[in-house]
Each structure stands twice: as structure tokens, then as C-alpha cells.
Length: 371
Image (cartoon, rainbow, N blue to C red; front, side, top):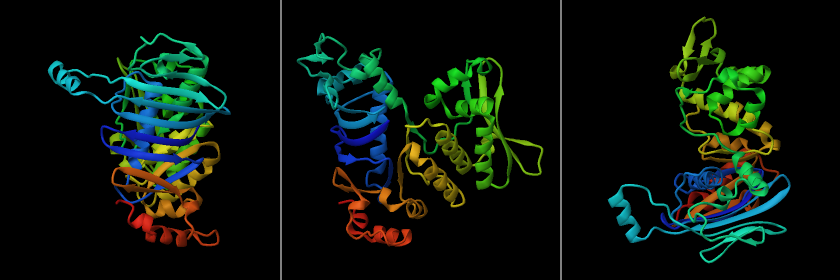
């Protein structure tokens, strides 16, 4: 999958993302508070609607264009705002009230797959009973259909390498020793980090060793790393690491936040199938400057096979990713705009990365990007 463009409106929270074109590699730059995280959260919500049944849409509207297996799609959706009597009932009954989807349309360049409003519902050129669940998306309503199943699979290939994630352990009633290589490969993108690491260690020892070596290069004090399975009622997975010249395995809770986040990026990106979308918000969070050079190089080495959507305002990250991949995020009151650095006239190919970074941070659109 590759996301090509996105327009997003949150009428409840009163913020709007103007239509934004996305490339195979996107570094969203801008000062804090400009709206970079809002963009990644919008993508996360759209993926949640496409892949899960538990979501709340209130006053949300979007248009997203994407390519999957050579086919271009466009998905538009608009949901209702909750009315005053709905809010009163919600307070009295103490449970969630879902708002209706007012309009939705899924198209390819050749045809309209599905379209619905309050008055009609058509799917593959046939009228459908309008009594279908008005709180549920076309993608989940028709998930068994071959065309819609492919679209759902496309959104399952979007991977969020989360910020501030420090999972102490993963527990599951499953017996991990009975899961086969084929079952692991089929659920690769949507399982928790520790599960990915465990089965990588089990089925792809060479690849797991490569990740360990990357980690050791960044943190030279580390001598070894493993994922340990503790078998009881609820099978638990933990990371453990060993320092050089020591025989003691150190428990995961003593791993620094920076080391854990580095390991998260290494595993998620290494295991992402070709055509996946990697979303990283605030790339530099928890990372020391010692982590950044190797991680930036690692990401760039995987860029040809994956789409990256990354936010950052750290000088090292911006300075070491080619300026043609920068997208400058600006906000005027409640409207967010994203402009390609390639379209900034002052930037010229013959200038060094450092010169372009200085130009960027001194550019009026960067310095006064919140109006």
C-alpha cells in the first residue's frame, strides 16, 4: 500500500487538514504545536475504521487516496455530529452512543465500488437495503467481499512504530510453541512487538542476529539479546539483554526507554513486508544523539521498499534526511497545510544539507508556521 493523498476534517474538535500529497518518503517538519501529530492520528483513525469494529466517529470527514497492488482507490467518509439529546441520553445511560455515517464512497479509477447516504446504498452497482448498520463502515460491512477484503488488507499494512511505548511484557493464553511459521507470516504486521521478536528469533535466527548487531552497534555495552518465553497459565514474553563481560541476563524493565524505542524501530521496520507504510510520530522521542545516526541510516536503507511518514523537529534527523523528502507543516488558526520543500524557491540542489537546514529554520513559513 501507498497513501497518495489525504484530506481530513474534525468538525467536533474544529481542526482541518487541507488536502496533502504524500510521497514514498515523507518527513513532516515544523515547530511544536503546528499539527504534525494530528496528521499521524488522522491516519491511525482511518486505519482503525478499516480494520476494527470498535471505533467512535463524531463529526469526522475524510478523503484518502491510496494504491494497493497496482490499483488506485479513493475513500471518502463523513459522520454526523452528536445532537444535544444524544449527549443527554449518553450522560443518563452511562454508555457510548455511536454517531451515524452520513455519507461514504469507495471508488477505483474505473468504477464506484460502493456509495451510500441517508437515502440510498449501492454496492457494486446493485442497490442494498438501507437498513444496514449506519454506524459501520463499508469496509467492515462487506469485509467478506474479495474487493473489500483487499482494501482492508491494505490498511492492515500500515504499521505505527509507537512513541513512548515501553511494554514490560506480553501475556497471552496461546501456546507460542505450537504456532507455525506460516501462521506467523500471515499475521506479521498486526501482532504486538514482543510476539514479532519472539517468532523472528524462532524462525529467522539470522535476521534476529542482524537486529541484535544493529542494537550492539548503537549501544556498545550490550553483549546479547533474547526474547524469553515463560510458560504458565498465561504465556508471557520478555526481552532480556546481557552486557559485555557479564553472564547475568538483565530484565526488560532495566532497559532504557531509548534502547527500547530503538529496538522497536529495528524490529518493526525489519519485519515490515514490502509495500507496508511505516508511521513514526516524533521520531526523536526518548532517543539520545548516539542512537540517531544509525537509526536514520537504517530507515533510509529500507526506504525503497516501504512508505515512511515520519514527524520530527530534531536538527540531526532533519539534517540527515534528503531535503527533497521534507514536508513543511503550517497552521493558520484551525487549518493545517503541508507544503513540499521541493516547492520552496530558495532551496537549490547545489547547497549542502546543512545549508538547507539553516534555510529551513530561518524560512518565514517555518518560523511563523502557527498563525
